[in-house]
Length: 426
Image 1 (cartoon, helix red, strand yellow):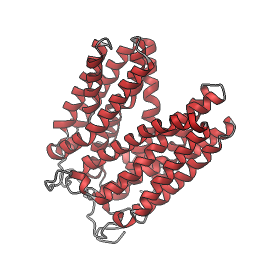
Image 2 (cartoon, rainbow, N blue to C red; image 1 turned 180 degrees about the vertical axis):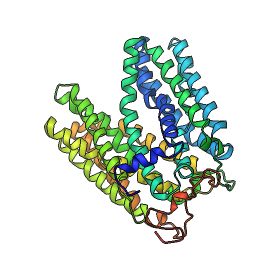
Image 3 (spheres, one colour; image 1 turned 60 degrees about the vertical axis):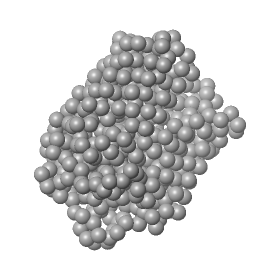
Image 4 (tube, rainbow, N blue to C red; image 1 turned 90 degrees about the vertical axis):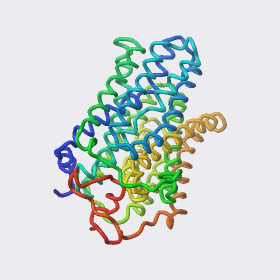
């Protein structure tokens, strides 16, 4: 099928594809809504904003720590033996928080830490499954873009669902319901045939695991700064809304940013791309940085909303293209861990961005906080530019296999870009 709008429908018609995508998104719902749910629960229990922020921060750090460790466990032991038990333990952590409340602070912090550390690496797991489900490189490539688009939807709808549950029942009930739904999503994934039959390629014993790849380290360094840029915008947007005296302005800016990412991801996935993804990623990140720079002008609300939408256009394509680059550089047998490291690094960068943007507002005003996003985009591009030789990959590649029984993992399957057959130089 040619590249176009029907390409996504073609992917979803593949056996198991819709179930895997939906199950993964539902399974990741607790993580997407975790910080919001923790803050609302803490405030409902009479806790301060500082306590709410502290608990949410511990949850975020714990998640960042646990993702690559669990990803490595998936590569070594398979998906069902890791993903579902981790989802259950993570949910039990939130159940403990809901039951015990914040009366005993060490217990509350321990509960959110457990919930974060055991968040199952469903995101990396799905990307490891796509080649065995879809077969061709072009379809896998389009699935990565579709995944990035679906992720934007989840992070938009998820917090809204939490607020609805809080208004209908309580903040504690919201914690329980969201995590119960998440466990069901993880269960749906691990009971599927592709997940049960997936096996990682043989791996070389090495304590660094996926991090022994110089190319992967270069990519992680770049996406730390992409995350920093995005994280700073969340704080800068609040400052901008305060400057204009309307809290709703923040919602408009974040909605515009998400809409831009959705449009960019859809358009990116609608065509078949030729050439090495490393070169394409440099171009996309350059455009991403250019989109962030005008935000520091802080024009009127209407113009700023347009700028926010434009700044988001290249985010989903950058993430989708990064998936392919990870695939090409992950050492054999470490694909889930490698994808999980990308998620972790991006999240840590976002946390640093929120921390840096606050002082920037106090020192130089709203424009300075938006300038942090532009600086992050430029830094991300500089990392990619200075590591071009490290990111260069051998011309020899391995073709994507076409059936579940023949496939072991996604590790080298994405190495052959759309438009290139196995063994040809990218």
